[in-house]
Amino acid sequence: DVGPYGTTPQMDDVNEEEEDFPVGPGSFIGQSRLASSSIHARDISPPDATDTTRVVIVGLPGAGKSSVQNVVFHKLSPHETLFLESTDHIVKHDISNSSFLQFQVWDTPGKLDSATDMSFDTVLAGCTVLLFIVDVTSEDTQTTMQYLHQTLTQAYIANPQLYTEIFIHKADALTEDQKLRCQRELQDRVDEELREINLDAAIDRISYRTTSIFDHSIYQAFSSVAQRLIPEVAVLENLLDCLVNSCAIEKAFLFDIVSKLYIATDSSPVHTQDFELCSDMIEVTIDVSFIYQRKSPSLSLSSAPEQEDLKRTTTRETSSTNGGNQHGGSDTCRGAGTLTSQSIAIIRLSNDTVVYQCEVAQYLALSCILRAETYDANTGIVEYNIGVFQDGLHEVIAQRKHQVA
Figure 1 (cartoon, rainbow, N blue to C red):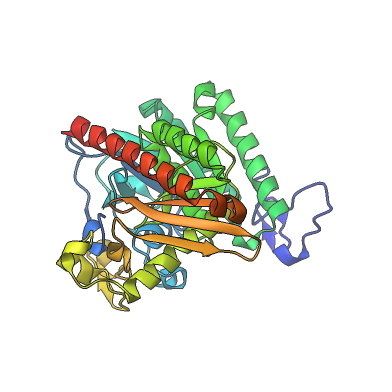
Figure 2: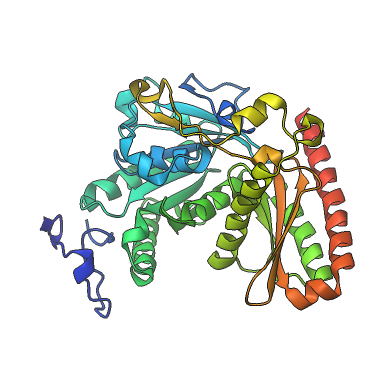
């Protein structure tokens, strides 16, 4: 096949020892609240003072914009995203899971100007994060780069305080080496183009991440997006650092149970394996809690209607989005409401590691990884310090609610 810059080899035929990265797919060289009731999709209206913090998702048609937000927030199966139709108008999704995840996701069509009477500047008004989805498997590299350059230029002129997250999406087809090369080459080219038009200040406000809806990478990447929307993230990190240092914990995450995004972690580097382990443990805990849940509504963090909504179903909801044919996955947050303030889960792994998880606030779970001998010798200290962390977290939440009020 011949791409825009010459012959495009298949990914299986790529020689990873070659110095030059192949041109074509994977290259940029050259020219809840809980349950589905918490995520309301509706036609866009002009922004006003009552709008909350916004994440605007932009990208060419077929890049995977709708798939990303449906998998992360609607719990749609990645394989079911094949049945999603292209977005033909702007749709706004309200996310109100826990005390810290309170924002809107604006899903935009590939051709924004032709799909709405609003200008792009209007869409960006009050926007905190611009999320640009790049389809790494697309051979039309030139069109992608032109649209990315046009979007970044217009965005930072309209809103200099904007943060941009670039997801190099559908990267499951690439090897780790190819992901790194692809990300480096894309970043170098974007930096060069921004310097040419004197937008050097924008360079430090752009982040690049390789993602796929078929693994944990999309959750880890969107966690970074969510953290940009939380003013208290530094305070939460400090609280986690104190907990980690006082208990010899190797890694700690504060998760939003509904979306499985971590809203804070301690200051040590995040390893993908640690994130995957803690994320999977949330799923295991929810599964077990759903089986053995207590029947008394007074013992649950969720109301009775929410409990009913949280039951695992295979029913698909048809929304008004995209001409009424977009699937809103109703398999959301199953069992999350069955966890109570006394919910604690401890899993011992074969490598003498303990994963300790407990709910520390409504829809917020603390996940810790520590050595088995450390936990066995200091169980009381660990549990006491987690209680201290919980008290500090509740103070942060109370202060946040006071400021909002």
